[in-house]
Length: 223
Ligand SMILES: Cc1cc2nc3c(=O)[nH]c(=O)nc-3n(C[C@H](O)[C@H](O)[C@H](O)COP(=O)(O)O)c2cc1C
Image (cartoon, rainbow, N blue to C red; front, side):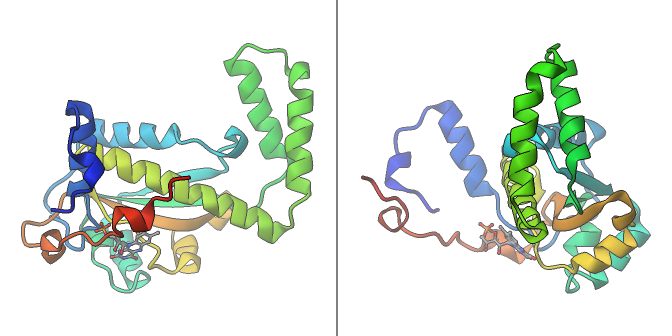
C-alpha cells in the first residue's frame, strides 16, 4: 500500500477519505452486470452539479448515456476501450460550444431569483463577467471552459470514491465523433472528457497494480 508519512495519525473521517482515495483506481474492466441504483446516480449527479466553476457560470452539462447500442458505437471512437460499454453508466462531460452574453444574463437571473436579490444590483457583476469574457479570444474561451471540465472530473472522481463507486477518467476518445453521435452540436455542447462509472470486475488486472506516485518530498514544496 502507498502510504505517505503524513497519513499516520488520522481520525475516522480522514481515514475514510484516504482509504477511499487509495481504493480508487482507473478501472480497465467493469462488471457489466452491476448497476448503480437511481438513488446512487442522483447523488453522484448532484455532487457534480455542486462543483465550483469560474464565477459560478457553469458553462457545462453532463450527458448520461444509457442506450447500450449507442455505447457500443462509442467504443469504436474510444480506442476500443470497453469500459465505455461495460460500465453501469457513461457520463460525457461537456462544455458549452460557444459562449455569449445570454449565458451571463441567464446566470444573473438565476442569482437574483435564488438569492431574492434586486437584479439591478447585479449589474456591475454582470458587466465584469461580460468584459472578462470579451477580452478572451474564442480559443481562450474554449481553454477556460475546458479547464473547468477537469475540475468537474476531479470532483466527480472524489465523490465517487467516497461513495465506493468505481470509475475511469478518460481523454482517450474522439470528441468530434461523440459530438456527432450524441447530437451535441445541436445543443451547443462539445464533449471534453468521459467518465464511465460502476463497479470493477473481480478479474480487472488493474485492480492489483500498486499505485505509483511521487514521494512526498517530490510533490510538496513547503515555503
Ligand atoms: C484526464 C485523464 C485522462 C485519462 N484518460 C484515460 C483513458 O483514456 N483510458 C484509461 O484507461 N485511463 C485514463 N486515465 C487514467 C490514468 O492513466 C490514471 O488515472 C493514472 O495512471 C493514475 O492511476 P490511478 O488513477 O489508477 O491511480 C486518465 C486519467 C486522467 C486524469
